[in-house]
Image (tube, rainbow, N blue to C red):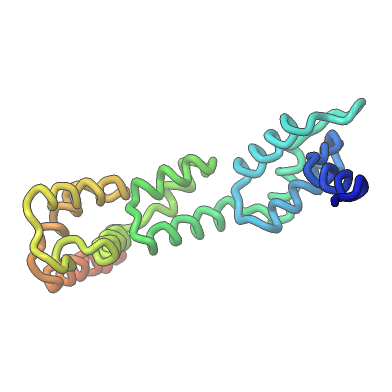
Length: 197
């Protein structure tokens, strides 16, 4: 037999706690907590704070300024758009995503066009990411079994969805041997070396 006290405790556990409306101090604490826990851009942090204001409301007599909080965290280098963009870009490229997908992700995170252009991957990095995706997914010369033309088209489409350009995707999927891709990658490295002079 369950006692009344046990029933009351389980009912209280199920009841959702109502968060207090926000004042400037609570909003600042939320921003600090978020910036400490997650790599973020200034735009993403401001969006998070705006969402929290909508969810919890504003304490009576308070006027909140999430932009000022974000600007202060940027000033203190707790939030750094360039560092965030470089880290996010590198992470996506290492996972095999292409330049277009990186650009979309950074744009969605509120990174400025100027910064996105500055950290855009070069040809070598683009090709390296495309080859990495092909290796992971078993495309082109990395396929374990023979691939029919319809399957090749699906592989090209998958690479395009991952942000790679059509020409690179087709070249990789239609390559007969890994050595062709090694040569293709080496050509991009040579071109980048020549342009830096």
